[in-house]
Length: 394
Ligand code: HMG
Image (cartoon, rainbow, N blue to C red; front, top):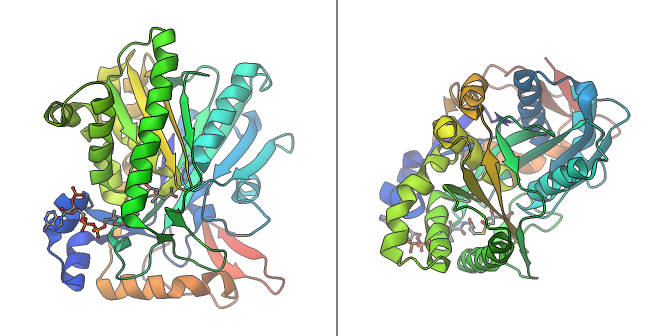
């Protein structure tokens, strides 16, 4: 697996000062510290390609070995052409590859991943690997309650018959779905609309439903206890609420559940504290953070995974950390993309956000200047005369 993150971030102490809010509200109240902000030359395609190239290179997998390329995103760049098609071209994947995109709010990447493991387990993959890329930009209106919970980034997952990080358990999961209006983004909006308190409740209801369903299957299979659990992390505090709910179903009191939080969940929150919500990629950024901090110590042990997508759909499933995952995770250096980022001023942040609605109509010929040296990989330039998106791959 590998991350692709924007080159810029906003520190939430700066946002708190500007909004006249105590920094402790964001940091302790929400568990948010920094949020990644996409620049004018970054979009779900460029972030996704960055993560996928890194995943392929660090695993030593050639593009020819990929038989399925799926993107999970709720930040589509076109109503028809999927982000997966851009990736297929820029990564040089084989024409004999199944390529598509899935949307279901933050659940799209998980739907792709579950489809990929079932494709491999069925034998249809015939030895080939799947590339699942979760890529999103989380935006809420400026000065709204959701503003401190924004973020942007991608996580690429290579799925193969003999995984070197985590062996996911096929067919042993609990699903939950309900038609709710907790979070939505009408076709003409760049920013998401959300009923914040309802979204928190829907998330917790979905977790309860999916986890109870998982427990039924897992008990039938005599499943071992979960050593760690990664949750969908729209903001850090949500993982704490989730853990309390889940461990409550196991019979723990609130105080007992909180006492297990540090060991069972905290190591998975390091990356999201630096990036913010990345919608489809959020659960996998939590898994990356966990493996980055303690894959070696977890070899052979089970990790629970909870994916939530507003609207809503959820799944609780699990995987076992592979033998040798510690050394392999060290070689991947999963946190490296976070090292070289520029802290934005509030003025720069607001200017970038105000330019967002124009980005899809900007002409590539009027290339925008930025004061950040471009990262290796594709840059989004704008559109051409036929409104096709134009990228420069460097
Ligand atoms: P808010 O208005 O900041 O809520 O909105 P609040 O005023 O209740 O404060 C939040 C917490 O800060 C509270 O703690 C306060 O006590 C505490 P809690 O009761 O939650 O434990 N607090 C302080 N703590 C320390 N020092 C202080 C202080 N002041 C207050 N000085 C909300 C919060 C999450 C609703 C808002 O940020 C929002 O709408 N965010 C976007 C929606 C969201 O992330 N929902 C999460 C569940 S839905 C989901 O995960 C799906 C999603 O990823 C989308 C998808 O699926 O595509 C969003």
